[in-house]
Length: 138
Ligand code: AMP
Image (cartoon, rainbow, N blue to C red; front, side, top):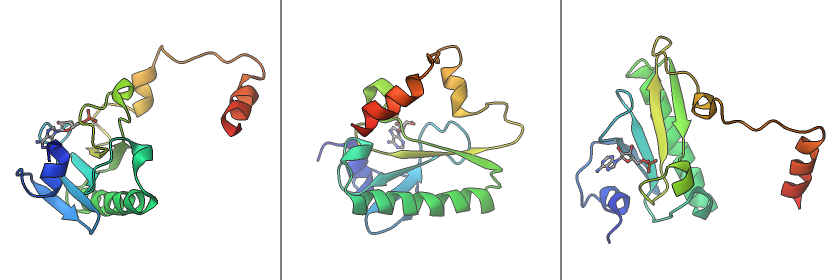
């Protein structure tokens, strides 16, 4: 098994475990964006978000909810940024799907995930939203 997060979920590589369920494992990010930054991974290997089986996706999201409650209650997080960098183009570095949960404070001055896209958002033509919707519905 060569995947880093497979090995962490299997306990072969040490991590600071937070919680787990039958199908998912939650541990502290080794280079936290904020104090208490947690990663939730499926125990079975899936590279991308949409590769997960419905059972694994449900287990990951269920565990993420439990982690979020702990971040609020135990760490006093006033908010949480919950994100998946899905695919290399979106910044995914470890190719085993993982949900980031980053505790946030009212005063951290970081802003929403939208801030990443500032100055790089498209301007839509009249009717373009409808075209995109049609394209996606197929
Ligand atoms: P991403 O860029 O979305 O693929 O995020 C990968 C995350 O994994 C980064 O936030 C890293 O800090 C984190 N990470 C990498 N190696 C480890 C490790 N051994 N234990 C915990 N977190 C890790």
